[in-house]
Amino acid sequence: MSATLIRNCEAIVTATADPVLRGQDILCEGGAIRAIGAGLPAPDGADIINGAGLFVYPGLVNTHHHFFQCFVRNRADLDWTRYSVIEWLDRIYPIFSRLTEDCFYHASVVAMAELIKHGCTTAFDHQYCFPRHAGSRIIDRQFEAAELMGLRFHAGRGGNTLPQSEGSTIPDEMLETTDVFIADCARAIDAFHDPTPLSMRQVAVAPCQPVNCYRGTFVESVALARDKGVILHSHVGEGESPVIEQVHGMRTVAYCEELGFAGPNTFYAHGWELTREELTRMAATGTGLSHCPEPVYLVGAEITDIPAMEALGIRVGLGCDGAASNDNSNLMHAVHSSYMLQCLAASRRQDPVPTPSHFLSYATEGGAALLGRSDIGALRPGMAADLFAIDTRKLDYVGTRHDPVSLIAKVGIGTTVDLTMVNGRVLWRDGAFPHLDEAALMAAAEATLHTILSPTEEL
Ligand SMILES: [Zn+2]
Image (cartoon, rainbow, N blue to C red):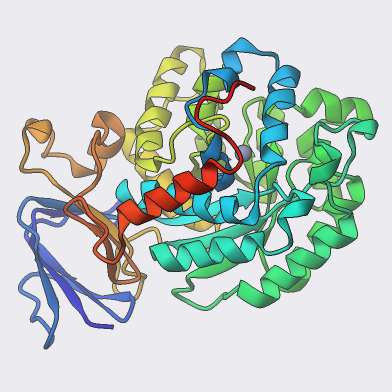
């Protein structure tokens, strides 16, 4: 792989707590950052990028998504505000159960493209939808999509085991047995999980949520993740705690902790409804949380208590969540909206709202920590050459350029970024994917979408 030298950058944010570097270069080679400094010599054959006006940041790390839901966006007939949760589930699950293997592939391409355009370089997808007719290669096709797009990809192998007749919300055609789920998690780990530095492919064990799975599914997930040395993930604290309490005699955080589904190798998504006592338990076990701000707006949920999590030292990352509860796949937008959301709730909080720089750190170093990685999330020699850059020589940035760290969360970036690099490879530059035919990909994705749903279909 040839080297890339970004020369004389207007600003480099190496990590949110570090001093901003001005007028320096970044040399990337072999997938990693080789050096950061002034006047670096260019290796023979290096691609030279002029850093004039560029603010350069560590690539964003998305820690919770459901790529397949990209195929149900922008539909008034699936609007959360018009239906009860049960009515909404009754409308959306019939569509999910029609998805084919190709749908999962093309939806992954669509989501990854939007993520890359907005500065995301690593994404964790919680893929929990396995309609029986779609076969057993869905995770494989997601890795195929990641290979095509060049994104660093973590697959959360999800799944549901509890039937509706025993209290879940999942249609029978999307259920698996615990044995099938665990066996396919093991297969995916053996086939794709690479724990080495600069890994482009990892796998986590991620049963969908405690309310839709048997207790044994979670117990066996814990055993498998420990055996294979991979991360555990699930939805926790998104409205299900009263149901779990009724069935199991305790709320979800305590239930998960009792099953061993907690600890430094575990992170949950959402946590809207968690009490301070539950957050204290999570801090004590080292369990992390992926905060997805945009579903909080769309679903009208309680506002996640990020100030308390910060005060208690809980590891926090950010996620887009799926398009069923957030119609975009734009993590850059989530950095801004998460900050704004906490400001809205500030007067009701015991703890102060974290600064804008904290929210950028959640989307970079915080996300890396949730995924168990020390080689992404900051720009330092030896770490992955994952970054994005914005050209600030525009009217948009007048009056903001003195503080590149706060800019992302406080002002927000309203357009696509100008450069995204993953593992030293330029994936997105000056409004185009240099290695892809975007129009052809778009046509193929739309054609596949229309095999399951016409644009005007009324549900
Ligand atoms: Zn989710």
